[in-house]
Length: 204
Image (cartoon, rainbow, N blue to C red; front, side):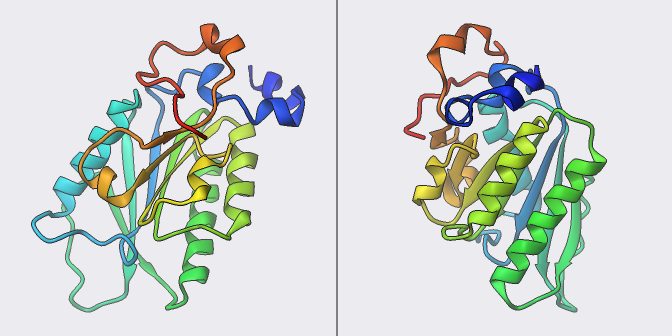
């Protein structure tokens, strides 16, 4: 099935979702979260945030095991998280662009360790202008890793063909379905996995 994507004309491939050919409903989900740029809001804690991220993913038909890699600035007062699904780590730099590249590297390393197909959700401040992110998304999508994005602001990057689902941080925090869905080729929609609860109806 993946060979269909690899052999397809690049422009036609841009209009297709990985879920058209691959059942993504029960595969692993790696969430890579920049907590410095997308902090836990007042009135919520790590458990409620993870619960709502999971709720948003389930609303899109993604029911697999969720692992959250939570990156935050180094601090002696950093809280200890007891949620077994949260793997905390430090952001090594004060440079947001450098931290973004580190999170991207972590995503790619996770993809190497994790058997395809799998889902990746990147939660960051804003990747607008960082074409290397969407290029990496396109690359791993060809290897059957489905890429999703949540960020602080709504931007044109949500409509990029390599981004399968997109949320703003506030909508993800609320457990809502994705704001945007990647394009779906209606000629092949009949072969789409029935487990994908929401079809590609967005403007992407």
